[in-house]
Image 1 (cartoon, rainbow, N blue to C red):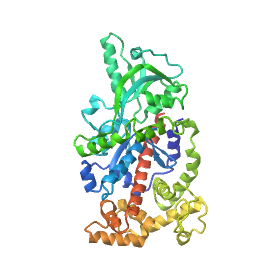
Image 2: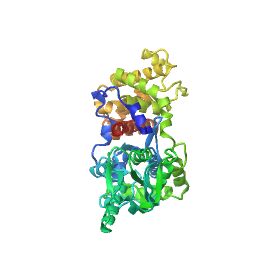
Image 3: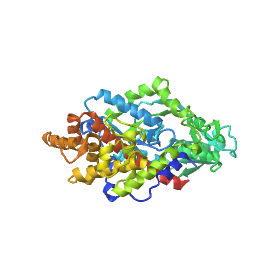
Image 4: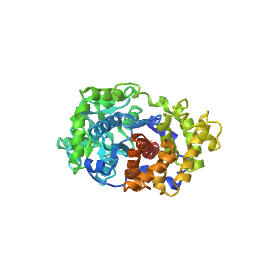
Amino acid sequence: MLSCLMLAMLLLPLQSPPAAVAQDAADRVQREWKGDLGEMLEQRRPIRVLVVYNRTNFFIEEGVVRGLEADMMRAWEEWLGKRHAKELVRLVFVPVTFADLVPALLDGRGDVIAAGLTVTAERSKEVAFAAPYRTGVTAVAVGGPRSRALKTADELSGRKVSVVEGTSYAEHLADLSGALKRKGLAPVKIVKADPVLATEDLLEMASKGMIEYTAADVFMAEAWTKAFPKLRLFPDAVIHADGRLAWGVRPDCPELKASLSEFAATVRQGTLLGNMFFKRYYVNEDFVANPTDSGEIGKLRPLAELFRKYGREYGFDWLKIAAMAYQESRFDMNRKSSAGAVGIMQIKPSTAAEMGVKDISTPDGNVHAGVAYLRYLCDRYFSDVDEDAKMDFALAAYNAGPARITQVRKKAREMGLDPDRWFGNAEWAAFALIGRETTAYVAHVQMYYAAYKASEDILLKRRDAM
């Protein structure tokens, strides 16, 4: 079974999250909005990056967002931050199915597509592509232990090839079918795989003989033979040659396109940074490994149960608690701060005692105290704030202290900002009074949560599709 599917089992909720958290970061991120880079920075909006959850471009391991596209986008975030030092530049990842990438972009539910997207004529009618970061990409037919060997792509005539709808493979196979028909041959039997699946899923299915053939870029298929040794590449059965991979934006976003194009030059193939990122996920066997031997479950499962337990008790979505714990300690129970905060939730013994928790030396007690304190902050200091912003302020108070955030709200009023809204309002007062630490803390927790939540939904659907 796929590692991402095992993660789906790990993420399977024991109950629906409370209604109070329904209007939260995951929903706010995908509210429809359209604008270019300048407007995003001026309005202090996060740049929403549309990704597809898979094991090489975007995935979550031990709470960490990883993958080739994820790493390149975070490098772009840092690159942008240096050019806009007075702005709060930040990205948020929005996982969607492959088929939903372009619709989500055009609808304004995301701003950039970063999903190993091949530039095609059809896509270019709707999407504006930045300069490519990888060129000369070849897509070939791939089979399994019982697949008939192929010497040319024409030998796919009359054979079933499973691909995810919306991928460039589907488009190129349709072109191949047209060419076969003109030669008087039977077209390819293109099988549309469930849209929640990824190409990596189909490679595993081919390796197990569950499907006859699929298609993949050579560099991806070669990498996955390390995980699936029964996978068979047919390098002479070329579906498409000289492909270009690039990031996509809406056609009316020239500033965003120009920024991505300029950055692409720093990570394209052949550059030091580009080669490092590529090797990390397509050459390094630490990442392209046997998915049935996932180590992430052993580390996260006990914590997931604790996050669920105290999330239910105090009325929080457990994935929000997980995101917060990752930001606080990277799930390290042994971490200690210079201020005396300890453990997974980085809480002080004195604060825990006030919450009625005497022992925070164990993960259970530590998580209990941290979540109880978060609830206390929500109810004691921010009862006058709308539900969809209350957690933002509670997180800020967890980081900087409630007295400090009370000062921030007062400062927000003086600055003509809404003291009851964090993002785009009170966060700027916090930036003026405290600096970047607290604003970054709240943003990172909410953005990890948005990625966790969207990934959970996709992975659960993917599990059912397999």
